[in-house]
Length: 429
Image (cartoon, rainbow, N blue to C red; front, side):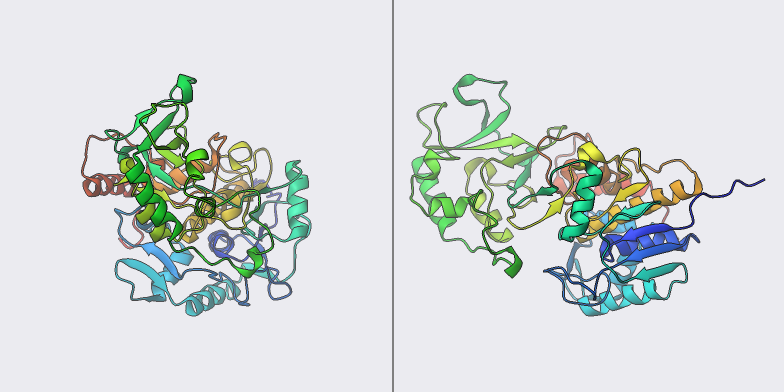
């Protein structure tokens, strides 16, 4: 006799990219879904479109090349029959090697797919208390205050993790160690930092470019004193040419011949990523690449994440979630940016993994943990691995599991991409 399923449906809270992907994947397998979306009853400060899967910022889903981390992630998702990537491909507009979409047509197509799925019931209301049963919380970086309080209560924490600043992150292998050295100030510690020294001439060039670089305009909802406690490095520099050399770039504790020293701190347990200490910034991404590459040891640095300063909400995933985005020992999953992934495609990926595992939970099956030789698996591993300096992360090869002697970056990434795709069945074949 077949055992009766104790669940009737799966709850998905949030009709953004992660939530819509999750709802589709679950419904596709014949399971009923209750999809909660508070629009148009209530809009977050960043949203204005009544449709699901609204794209708020850029309309680019980044590169389509599999030698690019986000491009590889998209191809992995295509092979898993991702609804959102299929809609993005169908509504794409010319953008060279990138996948850019007509944002209105994209949202309309996703909305139509979800609304016409007989296994999905859309409930247009604000969720203030987390419902019972299998639930995927995919409410994004601007989760409503009422639901935030409910999540705080669930997690037994005084607040969710709000961040207003994050420094750029580079790959260790791209740092020129002929122009850098490992050491701690005054010889204390275990040489945990990589130090990038600058002469007076090098510093003055860097300084002048820094204070004249273009910055990002803040959204209206980010005004009102969000950043008082964490000064952008360019704003700090504008207080005077010596402010940085007495602050984050101070050479104290090292050889007196150095005029300024930029310190890099390890950012992941594998030691493949390093962040620029004190370099929280509001510079445009292209400007960050241009200006920060003036630091001699970072002249060819590969930036896997640029510095950001904006309002966001995410949970302390390394302590709370496993590699299936499941809140440990519960029926609750988190997906999207609230889980600690950053970016459109990354959010879709988290929705996919959470959904596949919610399905397993519904059917009494085993968890599905993606191999960390894949980008999907690497992201899931990143957000669920202990990290005292945890910050939201985009897809990048720096979090990938690999050892290779291939020096050429393009050849290396091609090899990693082909290895990853062997883990997926191509649905087009």
